[in-house]
Image (cartoon, one colour):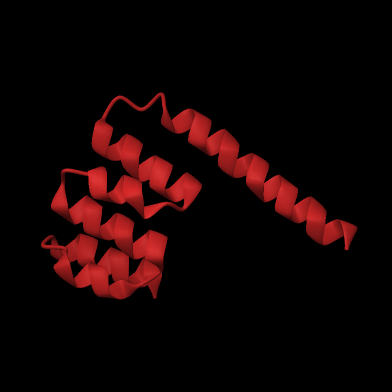
Length: 85
């Protein structure tokens, strides 16, 4: 039980540290993508201006490859589908 709790605490601390580093990213799209991944909150994806990155973000946060189909760049679409599964 303690090992499971320790793993959860470490995961939360790692996410918090990553979220702290997101704030220092100057590019707003990349910063929002970073926050979305770190906090696992899709609201940040909705603030991304670049449509391909926004769809990639939604796919990763929701874990649904259906968002990958809306990515116009062929390589990024393939990468998205491979990433989400």
